[in-house]
Image (cartoon, rainbow, N blue to C red; front, side, top):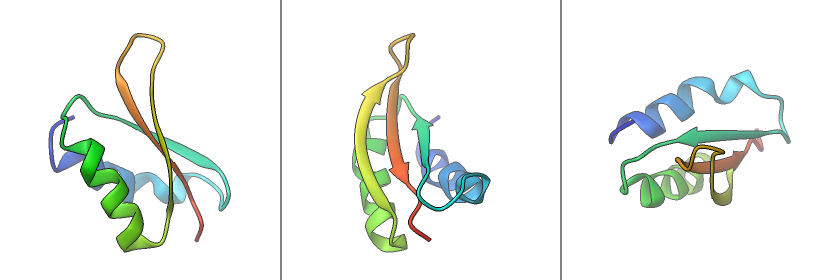
Length: 66
């Protein structure tokens, strides 16, 4: 996904997981490395960090806090 879609999809799907659970956003856009943590700060969610999927795609992991 390209900017701004990663944070739009994150916001859209956050309610799909229970409070305390993790959700991952796969995004090839390098701006997501800045945008996802910034979105978490603004929305009061916990940015856990980045990793990669089994096929090597960048993934940004968020813990739902509310």
